[in-house]
Image (cartoon, rainbow, N blue to C red; front, top):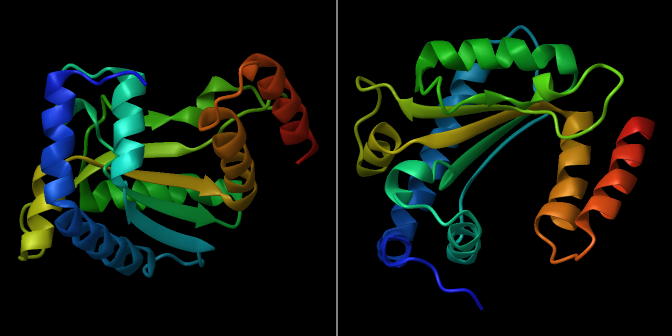
Length: 190
């Protein structure tokens, strides 16, 4: 089992100590996003939030080998918005950009990597912080001072992402390229 650098180990220890605060912050972030999305002229399929569990953080720190995990790890809190249709993703992203501070450099529209006839993971990832004037609670402090991730995608893109993440990204399969090709073909069918 690969060890993680000392800075990552210390960071993981601190995160573990404050995990309950991150869970509370994720719940608060979920409520804030839901409140904002209630102003849309359409309904979204699902909004979820989570604080990344300690084992997932450890695996990511091993895999990424961050030198400064406190600034490089931006998904300790993740909020996911699933729309019914792909054309609603941009509307949701635009609305959330109006209400949160967005790190444009770290945010990414992963849909642009593919042409219309290509297949793969499609999602908008906003790296965000809660605006300073909003909410006053210990949980809100985390959302104001730490970057967190908001993923926005359609329900079909979400189905694909869940399959790909569990089978390709998280597994220890040796022949990832072969399995990635097979899942790309399944994505085309979807």
